[in-house]
Structure formats: C-alpha cells, structure tokens
Image (cartoon, rainbow, N blue to C red; front, side, top):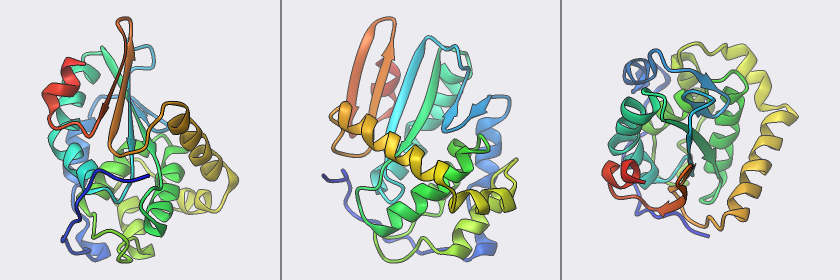
Length: 202
C-alpha cells in the first residue's frame, strides 16, 4: 500500500508560525461542516477524498483541486466533500490522523486538515509534533482546543479511523489521494487526480 507521492522538502514551522488559517476561513465561510465533511448534508453528489496527512500529492490536491470543488459544487449545494484520513505512510500519519479525527468530533475535520497541509513537513521525519498540532488546533476556526486535546486520547477518534480504513478496503483504495464520487449518475473513482477539472467533470 503506497501513497502517490515523491517527498516534500518543506520545513516544519514553529507553533507561532502556523500557515493557512486565513485561507481556510475564506474557503469555508458560509459552508456547513459536520464531522469530516463540508457541504450540505442533502447534496445529491458525495465526494470522498481518501488522504494520508503526510502525502505531498494530497497537499497539492488541497491547493490545486479542493478550492475549486468547494467554491463550485460544494458551495452551490451540488456536492458534499468528505475527508477520509488513512495512515499509509508511517507513525506521523497516525498521529496526524488522530488529530484530524479529534477535530472532526467538533465538526472541524476538513478545516483542520487543510491547515495541516499548509504546514506539512517531510515524510516520517518527526514533523508531526505536539507543538505543531496544538498550534494548528488553535488556528482552526471554531475549534475548542481543550476539548480537541481530550478527544485525541478517547475511543471515538480511533474508532472513526478504523471505519475509514474499512471503507478504503471495501472500495479498493490503495493509494492517496483517491477521490470516490457518487451521485445520481453512478460512481467514479479517481486515484491521484491531476487537476480540478478531472474531479469537477466527475
């Protein structure tokens, strides 16, 4: 099981240098969030994005694909996007995924993930530190940091990640990012999407 990735040389910011929060505020303004999802619950199309928090191509997707999905079909009510965090790449992936799941307990899984990508370091180099995660939590709009921190050691976050892994297995997902788009026209799977047009067309 591999990530569709090739490494990342970006350096880890300090807790006081968290990037990406302002962009997330702008992107999510006026759009409902619930758990790992963003968008109207009754939207006719569901877009599931299976990710690994360490995957550089997932970070690229968050920069080059996700904004177009949110500002287009998510904001107009056509689609709902659900983040599905996996832990393919190593220990840092697991620590980060638990942090995402804990944020999802407060309906901020998407926002937390986007800020995490903006601060992503090199795979399995110890970049997922307590200071970094706490800084991201503090920069995530609407997130109660104390409750988020407590949730990381609870059972719910771990159970959610097991459920994501089960969904990945059931859908044959073995690489990140993988988009699974379902709606009135059927189902389409896109592994390693190259640009927003590919996902928007689906």
